[in-house]
Image: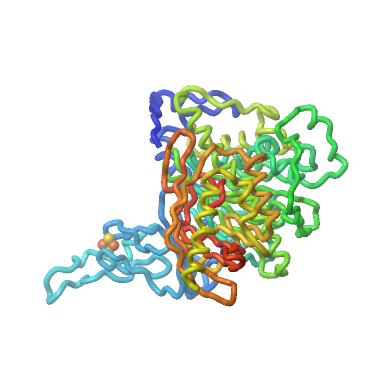
Length: 418
Length: 156
Ligand code: FES
Ligand SMILES: [Fe+2]
């Protein structure tokens, strides 16, 4: 794609308007901001989703992932614990592991010069360390225990593995707070997930535009006609948003409110979503009451890059991996649970049509970030307006608000010192 | 016998490709016969036997809904495809039921003229040979890459 983005003047980077209602566009465009995010956010005091515990069910299982730009290896060792370390050889920096996942791994050997690592990331062998026939080899001063890829801290919460490069990051419980924890527990607590599919959607935009979109409960029933017309989510439904104290984590939820079905406010606004539209096969939306709370939708995000989704019976985790200023990988993992009856499993697979790269709902989220990225190409000095629902970043019973988007920027600026 | 079966399958596949590339999506559901199964997945999901699809339809109604959602509900930039198909290989013949595998390459042409290779992969098809034609019953689209650019709107 040909794109001319004029780099903003350096001075603009500090020129962030007061309050949470303005977001300068250079934050989506500037290469130095991107580099700074890698250091301060992705390698900083935050927790990053890595994988599901069930994906590393047995000792010897491993997979590779990314935290921002940084490649990592995640393993389950013979002590049955989960470990993660940077996928970077301590010798001269080559990737240690090239596979995306595998089993029965006792060690990892770098292909370049065969330095060897155990599943915890300790350097255990250096090829020709003592030279050959007394010639060559490493000096005596070289100590293997002083070399190795960076190890991550690991936290597991309801089967979700999170990692952090930071020694200063608070415990995952403290990081998430009780309300967010409860909402994760609601979906995953005490259950054994089963991976039904994994898809990567390549987004033509800055990663933060996707996180804004996830947290934007304002757009849901306007951009997504499918969502609205079939009562998956109307602004007039019961529900609301939860924003944690840091601003960085959020939950948006809604529950069926049959009384509000003929809501006049909605009709008055003459939104696009008023059009007539019927499904030829409505079995797509035949759900089973999984959580017994009438809650048809719960979108939960953890700063900076994790989303847990329940849309009816379509359960998925999404991992956001920035690849460049204007490119982001969105990794979807569709889930069922081990105790699903066959017809429940089929329901989940059918409702998979709602989400992912071809999702009746999610399809638009895949391109709207690109529309913004292209729209603001010549407007680095200008800014977005986030005044829907006020100026704060607090929980609210209305979903006609941008409070959780403001919350994202609150946490982002705290992390970045902006 | 096999040569005419092969010919029927080539004809059915050519018809399918033209239907999508010519933007006659309304006709697409009627290209499926019998129980109807259509699924788009990726090679790594297929290899691991993971059931979920990027698109999953087990009724013709679900295909019709795909088309009406694309026409009336979903927002995406206007685009067209150009399908280039390889020769079908017959995997098995069981009475009138024939399974085949066919490689494809799909270029995506966006409104601004930008043309790119959008997907390559294989069709795993099940046909019933009847009335001197191959009637498509199941199509599993297995994309080679695990990455989908921006979104997948039109069927593959
Ligand atoms: S770079 Fe890994 S052994 Fe040399
Ligand atoms: Fe959305």
